[in-house]
Image (cartoon, rainbow, N blue to C red; front, side):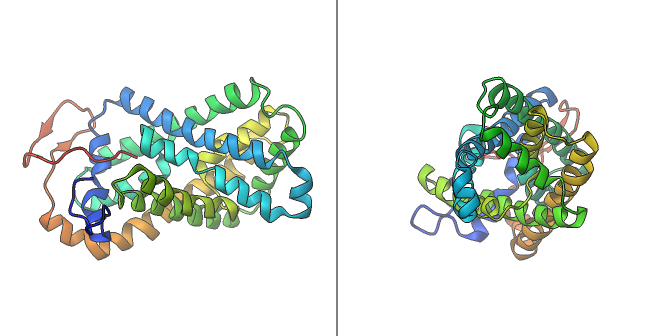
Length: 299
């Protein structure tokens, strides 16, 4: 990070606000095929975090039966490796874009068409990456095909698809509020160790609480279906993925992007550098002012 810090290698919230929208702008400079690959990596990384969490926590059924809080915490402690990979290694995540894109749009740094392209392509590319990990690394490797992991994976998916639409929606709000706060706070530190800690805390919390993250569920539920879970496509989509996605959108947009835009966005829009608008065909740009800052993290 290259913005003014608080003096100890961290950015204050108002300085985070001055860089938060820029990842959306930088993503817009990818061609559609390039961005698909970038977002495919994001989905795969989240699925890898889910696979690790499920393998470790699902391998201790006795503990889960007698002290479920312990296994929930263990799953929460391991899952954040997915978002760490997205932020540090590089990848795009639809759920964090639920805050980044509205913030950039309200700052007039992206057009509605460009933001929509990033969101739609990112969502389906995340899905493709999660499915790839589910099929290749969870099932084909045999990692989750033996007991007790198979039963643990199936029971988790059954639980996720047997809640009401409203319950999943509400859990989706909470989950993506935490994910977007993790991404927001990651900008605060200019050190890898600091970013990892800041990402870990809120992500661990939402997983331990059992909240719903749509991209993670693109891994958890299809994996269980591949393992023979009695879950139909309708169960997956209507009873989980749709309400979780809508909740994630609401949580990121309304509980992170909106309040921070209200607090800092209007001020930043008057003082921050103006960036060229990227059109959806990626062939024509209009430069308003030359940007001399170094690149910021993508997420």
